[in-house]
Image (cartoon, rainbow, N blue to C red):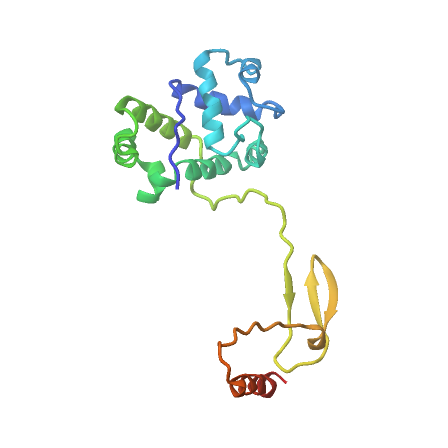
Length: 212
C-alpha cells in the first residue's frame, strides 16, 4: 500500500506535461534541464519529477523505467497512466476502488483520514488536486497493463507415483530426461540419548523396512 508525497501547484499544466513527454524522446535522465528543453522552466515545473517517480515512470535517480516507455505508446498511454495512479495511491484505492470517480472534496476527505495528521491540510489539498488532474488523463475502464519483468525459469517434472518410465522435464524450452533412479533424497534423524542398544536397533530396522 502507498500514498504519495508528491504534488504540483500547477495542476492545470499536467495534461501539457504529459503531452510533452509523449512528443519527445525519452531522456537518459529526467531532470530540470530536460523539463526546460520541453518548455517548462519554472521552479514549480520541477515538482513533476517527484510525481513521475511516484507513478513508477522514473526510478529514484530520475532514470526512465519501463512504464515511461510504455506511456510513449499513445494507443495505451491513458491505461498505463491509470495503472501508475492505482499503484501510487493504492491506499486511497484500498478504501474506495473507484477513487478516480471522487470529486475534490471526496478525495481530500479520504486523504485526510489516511495521512492521519502526517501532512497539513494545505498539502493534502494540493495532493488531492494533483490526483484529480492525473485521473482526468487516465483510463480506468480497461484491465491493467503489466510492466514487463525478466522471465523466470521454471522447471516442472511430470513423474507419476511408481512410474519408472522416462518423463520430459521442461526448462526454458529445452527437454531433459529424468528417471526415478536419478532422484535422491536425504533423511535426517535425531537419535534419542540412551544407552540401550535395542532402541537404536529398532530404529534402524524400521528405516530398512520402510525405506528399503
